[in-house]
Length: 363
Image 1: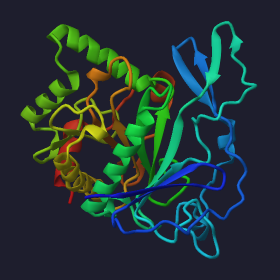
Image 2 (image 1 turned 90 degrees about the vertical axis):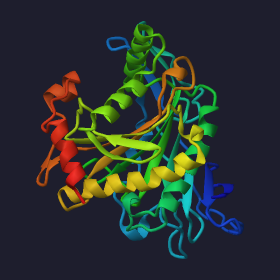
Image 3 (image 1 turned 45 degrees about the vertical axis):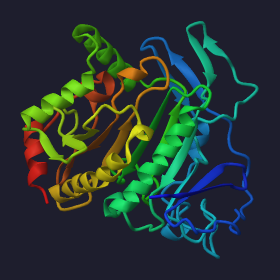
């Protein structure tokens, strides 16, 4: 599939990119008619010396859009009665800079540089984008066609490539939140992409484990070895095709969790071949349908692409998609209470092998 890529500027200077499946689509003549204030300055990054982690503080996000009525949805195409974030009257896939970003390149010249001798502060330089999967407000990712999923994957590859090259970006993280139970504030089918100015804690831990494994095994890739072991065991594998394997991790933290990985080591989405991109949609859509079929209702979930970092340790990466839900029963959610929230020590309510069997049986 050859996509037509058209970039424009919204009235406040933010970038918007149309990814059209029909090359003849013309995006001229649809300017942003709103009068928007300038985008906010970037967030602060504050260092936590007790945990050796950076925390972003983005006070402007307190005013972000929260559960608007469907006729005022900022992710729908614009109409004569309402100008949204997307000026055109229809679209296939659209990506644009978030109006309320956690990270951006708009540095505040008056930024403080430290709070105490142990707590330095620096600008949260990076980028945050919104990805609209479809113009249909009432749809979902699981209702997309495999062809549209391929368009989304190509758009994510484009944005990963561009955002990875930005100064100061350490990792690019595409993700989707689905369901009010997860905390979604806009119901239109969409995801986000964060270009982090630091290596996030989860990735730091994964890199440490991967480095130790490489040193013990003469350079073997940890994720590749885990995936191979799961493929041999089969007990936790839920679905597979020529290019991808979907399995429940043996030490799942969430009631229902799947990792979907390419069968060869790939560092990031841009490195996927055409065949791998085509094969992703059918297996991912199958997994999403299984999630919804578990309790015969839409499953709240987080879908997270784990990609290689841009700097040191990049060779240790292995692209994979983590899909998980906080729903543990038809009428019960898993709340992150004392042990998980305060200590980061997870206690799973469902045996991973049981979860895998339930997902295999779900249709």
